[in-house]
Length: 243
Ligand SMILES: [Fe+2]
Ligand SMILES: [Fe+2]
Image (cartoon, rainbow, N blue to C red; front, side, top):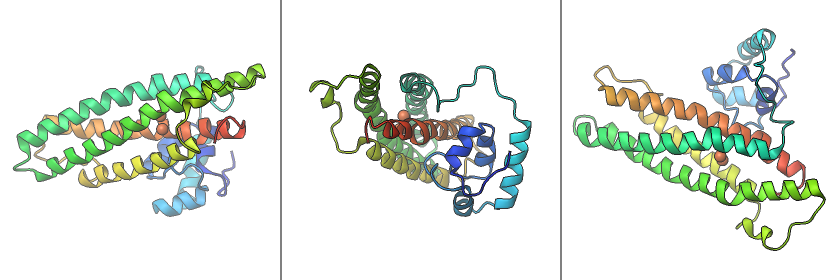
């Protein structure tokens, strides 16, 4: 497949799922900034465009679609919301609580010799607070609204007053997308404190576990945010359900 440099990175991921490891490896943001062209995203990440194109062409040629892989651009919005909540939100809730506790523990046990662990605990606590408020807003206000609007549209009905009270603010999807950016900034702090999750030579097993868990959660947040920013929100706006 020919890779066009003017194509948004989020669209490239929709087309070639196997491009995700390439983007992750080169630290190219495909989720929070999925609207950027490949050229701009590479420039921002300081990644050599030519090399990225070669890698993308390679994975595109060698890709084998999984039999159960879904193209979320063409599934119902309701099933996409179910998938996001069951696959990504549940994991994020559990993992955040676990990592926050673990960070508190290592900060209390080892913070005197390793002050960066105290700083890390604060950064995780701050990120967790913002992410949890964001997930709650999606689950309790915005996703039910999208579901109701999608159903009403399918049935050719208008929403009644009661159903219209779901969303508390103007342009809720733009607010959520803005919050994704804030979460990405929070995670930059975590990356900076951990030096990109590079475990110190004398780290305890609890610190190793913490770094590993943070790196895993970040990868999951990228996929999760990609599905929301670049597919769910985009489709809901295009269908005129919400903005
Ligand atoms: Fe979400
Ligand atoms: Fe979100």
